[in-house]
Length: 205
Ligand SMILES: Cc1cc2nc3c(=O)[nH]c(=O)nc-3n(C[C@H](O)[C@H](O)[C@H](O)COP(=O)(O)O)c2cc1C
Image 1 (cartoon, rainbow, N blue to C red):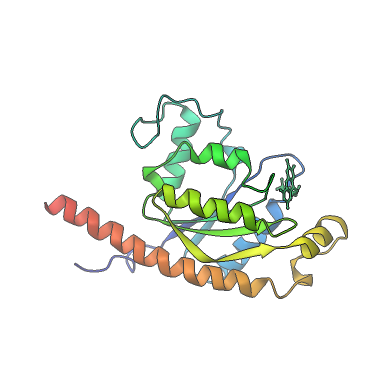
Image 2: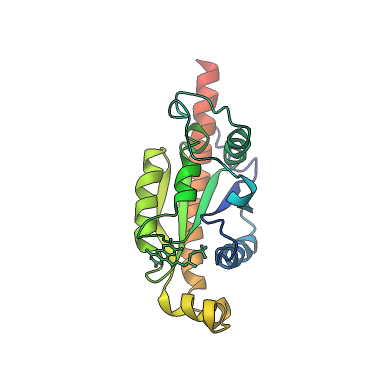
């Protein structure tokens, strides 16, 4: 079988975890998108849950077995299906991931299967608890979580929120994005090839 990853450019989604009016989420998402876009190794697009106002999940079963009927959920699932990998930019609410993201991920399964997930956390402890919980969650969706993550901890987070500082004031953070993206890029290529080879084999069988 010939590897496929050289034939089409991978697409990576940068998924925001919060939707509240005064959220901080847009700043780290844009910062990561700018660093990522400069690499030229994939197309990186923001996936904003505000654009997918999903109701509380009340379907009769898991989307693994029961297809979505909600129109927004169908649109959300199609968007995730288009993508070859994901970067979750997450806050930490009550020591875990925000409910709006957890709810959204209840609507998908097959669309994210065998794809990689990376993480950017912000908050008092860089959302490290939310990121750890997300790592477990994405494994249940048959995704591959990266080891490297970006954690924007208390000092830069508060200074950006309240003292007019920006990412440029914390130059040690950008290399952590690069390390995460290097790993994500490797998994994206490998898993994309694997999915495409498996699809070829299924057709040939
Ligand atoms: C309901 C709620 C719970 C929170 N719990 C935590 C927490 O457990 N750990 C933490 O570091 N920050 C916590 N925070 C503070 C958030 O880190 C901070 O508000 C951050 O800006 C939230 O992300 P957002 O602005 O994108 O909504 C909490 C905030 C809210 C609104």
